[in-house]
Each structure stands twice: as structure tokens, then as C-alpha cells.
Image (tube, rainbow over all chains, first blue to last red; front, top):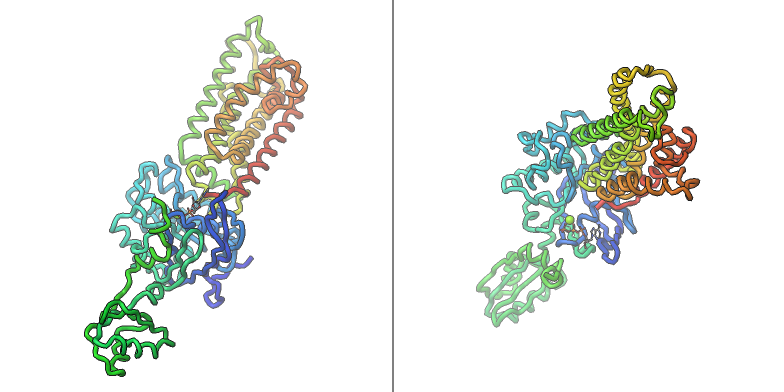
Length: 313
Length: 254
Ligand SMILES: Nc1ncnc2c1ncn2[C@@H]1O[C@H](COP(=O)(O)OP(=O)(O)OP(=O)(O)O)[C@@H](O)[C@H]1O
Ligand SMILES: [Mg+2]
């Protein structure tokens, strides 16, 4: 089995998920899910609680056996990677630590089994800001400290692909800012970063692409910009709304659509404020107001995942 | 594989549990040995007189009784702890071929068993040498078939390491595994092996096989030849190890 880390070869650093399906008893946790994640960017893996994010990541990493489908990293299934720690680093939700072992000893165990020099443990502990606490038992660590330790474990092998499940949970604001910057640098070195979260706003400032999941199914795979595309609109007020509608209809082939909101108010989608102004000017129609309206990403996420209506509380 | 075994030893030695269980095994051995020495004059004693080879063999064989169950407990805690503390995720991420992890643990805890057994044999020697000399009984640590007993004790305890790993891998629940192990060893098997009607069958149980291997039994029933006991016990060890390995390869780590 050949692992391809050569960037010219297409699959280097790419994650491919193809038709993954997993049931737990009656619950379909993941349902025929397919998506790809490309290197050199940060991909957000989003979905409400119970959407199947963790289950998907665990299938990708060979920890949970899919009922159907397959997933590969650099063109190879995780279980066939020869030295996984140097290719993929993962920090999963509910990754455990032995409470009586120190953070440093925990990492040193995995240095041994991954054939990495022991000093890597101290290096990554400094990177994740646990240099002071590393000799203490993990049982006494706070939630944020455990998150940092899990991230440290993922970084041990300086992997080409980083997979993090809800890494911001429990991190303080400084920690979150630090992590954002860290992941950005990581991706800029041409590496693959996949980060799951159930909070879109948390991801908005971090990710380049999103894969959105709801009830185990893919609902959207897009760039962050693409996600708001088609949902942003322009509000326009004109004394001649009928004429303006007619003028806009001639551009319907470009996806421009107008909707009457009031006697002199239209909401136009599929064009920008500038584009709309140009159409109006060319048609000689007077405008009184031209307001770009950007739908909140949070709203897009809620609309896509339908959390508000479907999640019983 | 050597790196995985080294990793398992590192896991074991970075917490203190092994030390407590080793001390427990040594204390238990000291207790057994002292009881045997103290009651050797008792007319009701079931053991052979201590000036005979058989008596001295029995004395050293108590090291197995002190070491084997606690080795199995340590082994069971070692593997079920991966599931209880959810370190299985990190472990199987590092080594996706899970049966290699189970094999590394089997080797590790077999070696731990050898170490425990050795320490307990030393405990017996430390107690027996002055005690017997005070009783004017001569004892040669290399004579009277004792080396064969040492070998039996070492292999018996090593196989208990395999049993602990195998059972733990199969059940994965720490409390159930440890409680089950202790109940079986100290309650269930002693009861059934003392039922004469089924003694033909019970000589094949793990505890009886273990007693056969070291030729010590506190039950009134007979037992197999040492080599037969060794084979039967190893059979249990390997069967449990195989079943445990298969079951942890198939399970979902969530
Ligand atoms: N081991 C398991 N046994 C039974 N059901 C499970 C198991 N693991 C997950 N599930 C179910 O599968 C579904 C998906 O769970 P999963 O943990 O993948 O969601 P998630 O997107 O990670 O959620 P969260 O945002 O809360 O972490 C849920 O309905 C969950 O109850
Ligand atoms: Mg989750």
C-alpha cells in the first residue's frame, strides 16, 4: 500500500469520504456521506449535536467500522498507513488519558510506539502551552488543559493531515485565538486541516471551506464565501417597482431574481448592489435606496440544518 | 513489535498500580509460606513433611498462588483500562492493527508474570531458609527438584498474565473483568473442584490446571501431570487471548 505525500500526485494530503454509512441499533448516525477535504486549507466539519461528526471522523480513522462506504487519507485507508502518526494527527472528542499518568508520560508512551524521539513530547508540550503542567497527573488537568494535551498528542508526528474534533471546547479566549493562528499557519504550510464544530460562528473566522452535516447526511459542501452566496441579497426602493422588476427579469438568465416586499420595496438576489444599480441606470429607473443585505452565517447554518424546528428540547 | 512492547511497559511503569499489586503478591506469598511452615508439624496438615523433597516443592510452589491471580488482575486492568480511560483511541490511532496491540500486551504481561513469580520465589526463599535452618532441616535451593518447581511457578504466572489480557480484551469492562476473575478464582472454582462427583471434569479447569503445573493443591481432589496442566492452562490462555484479540479488533471505539 503506497501512501502518497507527493503534492503533484493529486491525492497527497487529501481526505476522501465515499458513501460512509453507520448505524447504531436503530439510530442511523451517518447516512451515505461523501465529501473531500483538500490540503492547504482549513475545512470546517459542521453540524448540530448528534449530527454524526464524531462518528464520521472515527470511521475515517479506522476506530469505528462503517456499515458501508470507505474513507481514505492520501489515497489509503487509515488502517493501511504504515506510520500513521507522521501522516495523520487526530484529537478526538472524549479521547482519554489515564488520570494517574502525567501529561508528559502520556505523550512519551506515544513517542515510543510511534518511534519518535522522546524530546518530541517536551517540544509539543511547549507548543500547546502545557510546559508548566506537564509533570502533573492528567487527573488534575482542567478541560482546556486536556484539550491542549490531546492537540499535543495529534502534533507529535508533525503530521501532514490534522483532524480535530471540537478542539475549541473548553479553551479560553486566548487559547482560541492561539489555536486559530496555529491552524492557519499549519494549513499555509500546505497541510490538511479538518476541524469539527457545532458552532458555526466559532468557525467563521477560522475555516476556508465547510462541510455541513445534519442527521448523518451531507447538507452542504462549499467554501465559506460560497455558503453565503445566493443567500445574500440587495434591498432596493424605487418609485417604479414594476419597471424595475421588468428590467431585472431580462437578467433572469444570470440568476437575478426580484421579490416584492412592499409597495416600493424589492428584495433582489443573484446580483450585487453595483450590478443592480447598473441595470437600473441602463433602464433609466430612479432608485431611492440600495442596501446590500448579507444573511448571517449563523442563520444559514440554522436554515441548512433545520435545528430550530427539528431538535426536540 | 519490540517498540509496542516497550510502549506497554512504559504505560505500566508510569503509574503505580504494578507496585501495589507486586507488594500484594509478595505479602500473600509470605503469608502462605509462613502458614505452611508454621503448621508443618500439625498432624492434620495435608502437605508432605518439610524435610522431604515433596514438602519443599510444595513450599516453593506457594509463590504461584501468591503471584498468579494478581498478575492476571494487573493484566486485566492494563487492557480494560484502555477502554475505561478511553486511551484505546490514542492506542489504536498509533497502531491501527489492533491485534498487534493485543499481542504486545500478551507478551508484556507474560513477562510481568515472570517478574512477579520471580519476586515471590525470592520471598519464599527469604522466609524458608532461616526458618528451616532453625528447624534443623537442610534446604538446597537447587536440589530436591526445586528448579522444576521454579519453572512451573514462572510459567504458571506467565500464563495467568495471558489469561488476564485475554479476558480483559474479551469483556473490556474493568470492574466486570476484575470482579469476575477474583470471584472465579477464590469462590467458584474452589467450590466446584471440591465436588467429588465431577472431579473427573474439574481437573481440567484453569485453577486445577495451574495447581497441576506447580503440583500444589489445597483441594482434596487429584490433578493432572505437571506438563498436562501446563498445556491445559496455556490452552485457556491462548484461547482467551485469541477470542479477546478478535473481539477488540471487531469492536467500535466510540
Ligand atoms: N457508541 C454509540 N452507541 C449508540 N449510539 C451512538 C454511539 N455513538 C454515537 N451514537 C449516536 O450516533 C449519532 C451521532 O453521534 P455523533 O457523536 O457522531 O454526533 P456529533 O455530530 O459528534 O455530535 P456532537 O456535536 O454532540 O459531538 C447520535 O445520535 C448518537 O447518539
Ligand atoms: Mg461529536
